[in-house]
Length: 565
Ligand SMILES: Cc1cc2nc3c(=O)[nH]c(=O)nc-3n(C[C@H](O)[C@H](O)[C@H](O)COP(=O)(O)OP(=O)(O)OC[C@H]3O[C@@H](n4cnc5c(N)ncnc54)[C@H](O)[C@@H]3O)c2cc1C
Image (cartoon, rainbow, N blue to C red; front, side, top):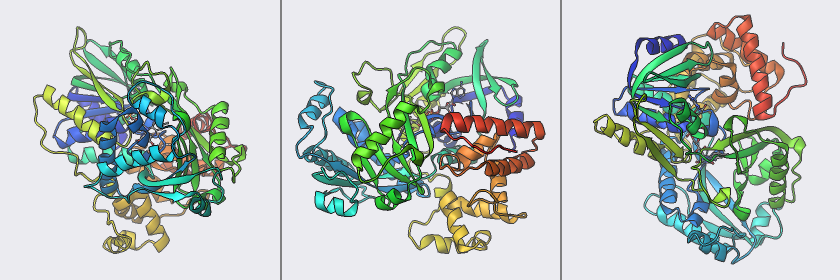
């Protein structure tokens, strides 16, 4: 459906069983679950799908080793099961990740960890090998019946330094275990939305905010044209992450559920470091702060911070954080130089954590919860607010919320999401040789040159077949100023993937912006294709370009010295 057709559906229907506000991974997850139960749900999100914490995460799909220290055993167990589920059902985007923890003592941090676990202390010491061993043994134990990644082991200091000679020579050993990472989180979230649509005629619209409560109706506002709509839901799911309290305020309830913390990351162009890491992540947790050095496509992500903030709209990676992040990475890998000149982009987002009196941000629970605001005068529907949670656990969280919504609607669950493949993970062959025979059974894809079809499969999973068919329907040329993409591929996003703004393509249908691959000419070229495909006139086209330049600078720290045409 085009955007105009989606808006037409919204204009023609006011009564909805469920309104989901927020199209990050949690809102998308609830939409998919409700769709699978045959519920007519409407989802609106202020910006694009997957904006917010969903696009700003560390991109790890993990059990959360450090949560064991806070005695969050349930969360770790659930996260590990969900991690395994995503490795299976979203295997086109979720990949195993060899994770290496440099260990600097044998018994360090034990006393602090035990005190912390029993809520008798808040300090986190430098974790020694014994403590890491206990944690990783729990990790392995939890997935003993569902092993999809290898067990943990320890490497001696000498062996570790042989593998990565630039590591801090003060290490006693390294602990090696496996978690997972997500290659295109923004695309994966959007696929969850598209799967919901495929399962049932739900309505999901981006660039549409829930702006106010008006005589028992919710007013929605199109962020592009300013047009307003009114809907009357039976139940509202508030999945607006760090904006939950603000959204509740708009819906007539004062809440203080969220105590968000900002987390920032840097993306570096560092081929030598990328080669040395050889696909593995270095993960350290000094004094409760997470420090990771992580090969992301052909770049390196380093991060992150954990700083309380009041206004999620203003969260940006600032100068102090840059120094801190580079300094932390330098401590793990003194053999490399972490300099500002390596930075190609930076990003920041706010974790929607529960408001808490914990002494440090690291102590705040990363578990998720769902808070109910019961109907009251002027607001005839209940509101469920989705607090906290991790990317990793979105399916389980969505299931718990959906069950509560179903109870309110007096409906029964008819299907679980636990066994559902996601998007291009559906039918994705899992062996190394598998993709080639699968590709041969899709003529349009098979007709592409070998490198290109591999690229399409790694970018879209089995949806590569649909992309290739679309490409084959018209004249397709490689973009002249952006490597790896073609004109029809950009058109595909515009016509099939809810693109309403230039930034949707630059920042979320592709990873071009975050990977620092954009040039002024590239931005111009992509903008022209979008204009052509979506019927933008010159005023709209120039407005989109100006807007993109502003966002790239303010949110990703990307500035161009050359001007845009
Ligand atoms: C720095 C950082 C690192 C992280 N790393 C990891 C990790 O490695 N692994 C992991 O599992 N988890 C990680 N997480 C946690 C995970 O990313 C989040 O918990 C998850 O993405 C939250 O998703 P959400 O849908 O609840 O919120 P969000 O993704 O923030 O989505 C909320 C959406 O609501 C929209 N919205 C706001 N107001 C309105 C309105 N009035 N009307 C309509 N829409 C509105 C926003 O625009 C936004 O798109 C990390 C989080 C952060 C911030």
